[in-house]
Image (cartoon, rainbow, N blue to C red; front, top):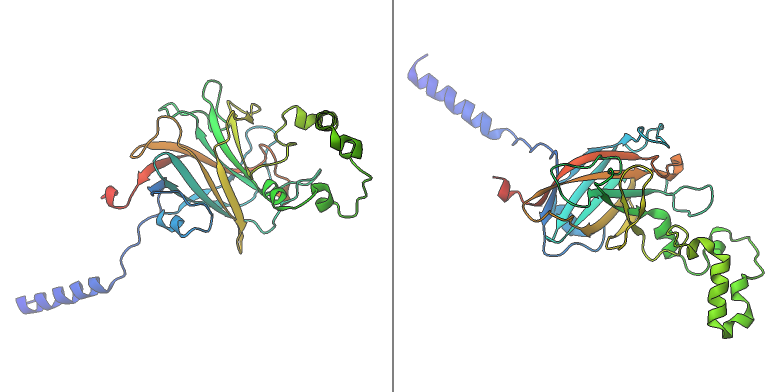
Length: 290
């Protein structure tokens, strides 16, 4: 092969390489929270598109009772944004049924984000933390969101054919005696009076919970988390926002876990699909990674 032929072959090879499609970047193996000025207020906000998608493979929770044996959603897609003080997650997963009833014997769809309450190299056990290593959980419930969207009595909405004479605490003589009415409400609503957050009328579709191991789940002293969900053509899209854990700021890494409940499969409590601890980069940007 002479020199002229070698040059021609090289040019053809170079042109061929130039026509090839560029290789797409591999999907991230961590959640990358992109820094923004303000977190979105809705799940369908266009701002979420700034964040890369982390595909979390869901697996049945089969380590503690009640265990999950029936497979559910296979994957949850997660995007994350942060303003440096709080962090927001957008969770999307497939679910063919919208389970939103809050009634006996019926189970609702839900999802949750779990993070260590305080950042530490010694990460707590992923199963709801462990003694002395508390985790903070932001829990969104489709049933709570549906209850908030209803107008009037929830019993009437769930059971339209039910007939109720009246509740004792709505009796006319009590209308002029607020103290007596309040006492009567407590008498006939003992769970609410005891501070049961499940029985109390919801004020938002997200609950803040803490735990130090399986069976220790409790309401947090404060409830700073917020969120909302909406149905998509294939399932759910849910936004959850919460303060960053202590010890985590822009440019640092933390850990996060996710969980999904399918009401049609009777998921409840620890019976769920979940993604164990995953690294989260806070304040990540494509430019900063080069």
